[in-house]
Image (tube, rainbow, N blue to C red; front, side):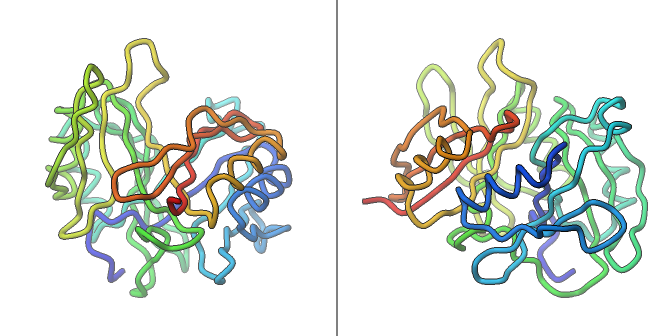
Length: 258
């Protein structure tokens, strides 16, 4: 894996209805999610119009749902050593949801959570090829990773100690506190913010790029989702929406400004 350690390398949608999720996200983002899984497990690759892979769609089985799994978006953070990273995670107050395991030909991974409970994967890919699922301007790619948490200072310290992330700048959001930017090396990958009191549990939210934000917002409604915020211009000139798919899963879309 040639990406710098700490880089987001893969995005994954958990859903009980992959066919419906394919129809929705293909329409809104312009993806080409596989119509059928290519292996024995119901896991479908997410492709962009440029034939790059962003991640995968995993079917939630009844057994997974009984175990507490719910529809959601997750991401994988690339590391050099999964077991060493898991040790750092637990030492820093995080938890292990699935102990490290291997997928032949794919890599070694573990499912974990930060001290405030936001879940994510750590992974060491089997290939030395760089992953390009995260790209600040790539069409159809994830352009931004945003953590909303109950203890921003503690969360920032956790990710810095485990992954070496830095926080080069921040922006005041008034009573909501600071929007703190996150960097891996010289690349800004997203930001952290404080979750409003009484809001959902701490979680990561991901913003995927589409060609036209107004069109994307309209398509969300056409396909049975809901736009909760925006379109709104953000620093740098892009415009965003925050939406939910027909299964209630939150996600963001980013597009060029006008």
